[in-house]
Length: 176
Image (cartoon, rainbow, N blue to C red):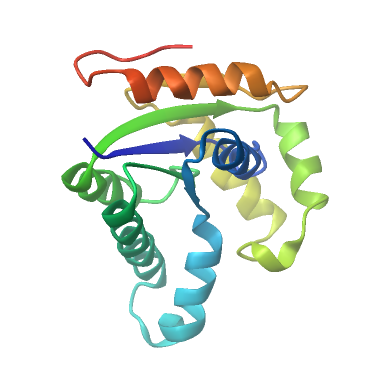
């Protein structure tokens, strides 16, 4: 069965780093969401009545293309958008969805955001980052795993957690 691992957490929590790690370590295709949003917005955003929905539609189309070629894919989200439940439902039509909560300290998130290449991310204000991260931290979903990314990056823990998700038979949830 096809599977999508969704890394959910605040901006700056390390979701991209984890996704790239999983790609390198386990060969899981990692779909970076923000570049898809930026591309969709550049093409049609100003003319589209709901640019955020346009971005989520681009993510779903890219994911569907990946799943035609691969059994497992991974993507990232804050989960804060009102369109996120729609995306989850649509992904569930394509594959089994495993939700992974990524924890990080708010100060660490801000420091990571300030230290990254802004051209690869959706431009937003610090107030919007604080609002989005507050929503992301309060997000309650049926988590299949939790990755505590506060402090030092723990590749071994992340690898084990995701390998357990991939090995799960869909009847129960693997927990880390």
